Length: 227
Image 1 (cartoon, rainbow, N blue to C red):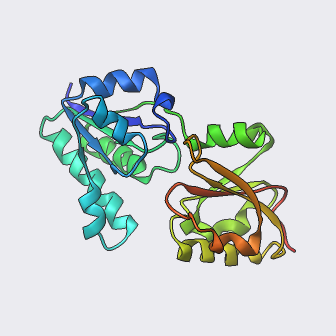
Image 2 (cartoon, one colour):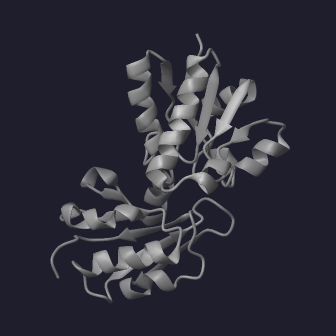
């Protein structure tokens, strides 16, 4: 049956791709990556995996909302025309992946077969590095949604996608509304990669980190509450 299978490329190291996903990637006739800017992709190339990416959409889109809509629409159209699509995203398809949310809606509306396979996200690596058990409660936000931090009171917080100094500055300002400027937070970069860095900094130093990019995140321990 033609449709869409969505898989995750894991948090960075090739060995963290699930065996099920690897078999699907090897057999895919029409493989699309949301982005080829991911550490695992070079290993895919080295192993002879052929794919197309939507990186050119990033250059054309006005904002992320329209970008994700455009990617999901392209995939839905291809599947609707009879193409058997495999769509691979960074990390896990089930964690902070807006295109997958949109694909679920489109598949339901248009009668397109959609299967979303579980994958490993960077959060599993983060839990291991920091000794965090999520059953005790944790909040996860995209850094671009930093204005929602106030709703996360009562839980440790993870901010993902600190890909630019401007985004980091906005996140720092939002956190400063509820925490002291010298509050100790944990800056995380390139998890599961050879140059992985997990370092404790003061909140006011967040936007001064020299290696901010799409693989940067922040862990705010303790309780986010009014300062």
